[in-house]
Image 1 (cartoon, each protein chain N blue to C red):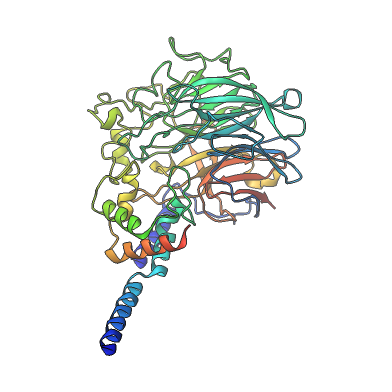
Image 2: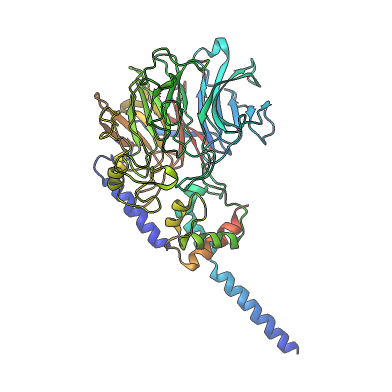
Length: 105
Length: 426
């Protein structure tokens, strides 16, 4: 029984670690700095008419980016956001969501 | 992904540096001054504009907070706060921000020593249909408070609701720069078209215009708009003017104006003139357009050749308006968020003395490089062409919102990131 429990815990830890590795925060930071910061600001605070994204959770960020990538109209800045999301891979989106949600408050 | 973006950016940089008419940017030619910078204020929220007194006292606005003043000692006094602000000496709950609108421009009266007047341009909820207003305030003796609010212009249109356009939120295309012309003493007020196709060429709606008024809000006596136009209108047919500056010798009025996915424009204004912007549907060979505004057509969702855009929806339509004011510069047919303008004066600027500085917020749409920068324009005598130098900005790129020369001769620069910098030529 103890052996089975250890196996389950070990498997779960492996999955958690794999998930953490899948979301590469430093890769997300690199994309953010290159493509996002000039509108949303270095700390996600929002600037001009571009909204703050600080405090948003990873699911929200990933959902929005996925919608923009799919060509859905989400809000008034869709024409600006859609081209930014067009070439993002699923991993890119996961990385960005992880970076934004864990870095900006 | 990262490598791809970096590669694209490098290509864009090289392409922009090598494009005809764009100077390769740096301050290395013999006539250019060496530049250093100081951070004057930081951690501001959307600083939008500044205005100076001769002793260096600096009034400044933050779009969603209000008006403050920085004294020569470095102390900052919050003067007039907007709704939901605290710690301002006075609060006006009708003043609000949304999208591009809020408290925008600020100007100091030329006779400030006598009348203590300062002016701001702000969105207001006083009327159910919200408006932009130009508000005159009296500053007290120790610069700790303002009083005697007088709204000298109450009827500048504000975009009420979201529409189906890029930047389509309420408050868009809101203009907002205000400046006194030292040549005639009048206050010039720049406004925007609100994403409303009718406004720019409309004779009485004050959006898409440059107004020229006295300190009480009355029309300048020699304004010369067409018959039937509101007499406060100096020029009309504008899209969204956020830069205005006066030639230091001739006092001619120059504006810098956001373009429609193409052609940011700088032009010298003519009293009563038409700047040539008319985004109405079903005119100029165009059909229906989203929400009755053709300003981003023929394709407002995806990037395309700026030249094709210009042919379809010109920024200055000289075919329909043969007398339209011609631009001196169209940013090489690109739209990159050209926001503010100022002429540099004084020999400390060496070869840049007399040139106009224009600041770019940066918009990377389609294949257009983002273009956050400060450009120096040497404007030809006929006002129909320019030589361009791009400043090697010592503090790096940012969303350059406002450029103002201070009484010390240095250039003060507000950026959306939250700083006001002082650039000093050496």
